[in-house]
Image (cartoon, rainbow, N blue to C red; front, side, top):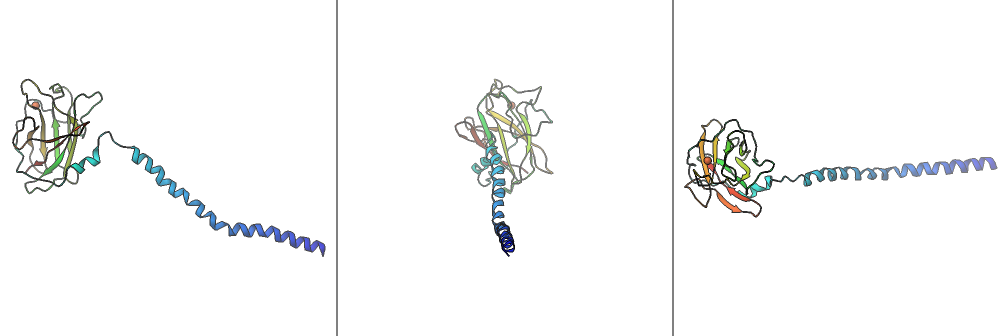
Length: 214
Ligand code: FE
């Protein structure tokens, strides 16, 4: 009998931990909760630290709703256009010199509606007023986004002796349209219908210009 009692006691104590383990199994489910919460944390790190040197996405908060003031006048192409440029929104290359300019705006139709996918090809002089006529420095094309907006990171163009007025050349073509060639100017020497609205933001100049094309 004594042996049987001891046996029952042994079985009893052996079962208790097993039952406790089963009972404690549910808490092991919440124990897995921290894993999913860690995943977004890991994903958050690169997202917040991947800030571009160009204030790209937020820069459009400066733009507001499209405004139109008639068709953008055409302006002479000049002698320094080079076709087949690289697609890029920043013309800044390693070792660039000058005052940084970020130019933003819409490409709009004559009803002031934004045009997505419009092609813009920019070219300009460097800070010393010189064009790169053998390469593609300070040259590049891009397309407007779904909301008809463009953004160009570049420098303020320098003056050159044969044309002492600061300007940026641009060609625009809306889908299915013809190429429009013009130039943008600055408030120091404004030209009707082609003058960029300019603001000094400290470490860069912000220029705003909306193109209105047929
Ligand atoms: Fe020029």
